[in-house]
Each structure stands twice: as C-alpha cells, then as structure tokens.
Image (cartoon, rainbow, N blue to C red; front, top):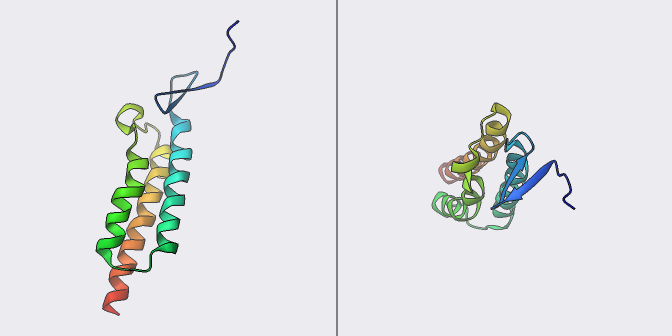
Length: 101
C-alpha cells in the first residue's frame, strides 16, 4: 500500500505536491548560516584571504547544492539564500576594516 506524502526528497532536493522546491531554501540557508557562524567564531585569523577561502570551501557549496535544478523561483527563497551571502560579505568586509584600523 502506497502512502501519500506532502513532500518528497529525491537526489537531495525537497519537492512538494505542486512540484515547487520552496521548502529547499530554508534548510539549506540554515545549514550554511550555521557553518558561517562556526567559521566566524572559531577562526583566529582575520585575514580576508582566510575567511574568503573558508566561505568558498565550506559555506558556498551548501548554497549552490542542486541550485541549477531547483532554481529558487520565489523572491522569498532567493532572499533567504542572499541573506547568508550578505552576512558572509559583511564578515569579509569587517576583516578588511580591522586590518586598516
């Protein structure tokens, strides 16, 4: 007997009954934001190059995972992902300002 489900995960992408992938952006952003927070708290070096390398290696892959497939089509979904990127940008800018000051 097959059961009905409102959301299904296939190849790492959450798809709902209407075939939209809106439920994908919140967990992705939460995970990427958590990793970014760990980078900010645990890295002693405040060099721009170090923070940027860690963002590129650890955070960005989560934001880009399957994005070509599920293409955030709603403004809210894009804003959630862009918020994490904006936070990373502020972190990188603040490291540059700290070196100048």
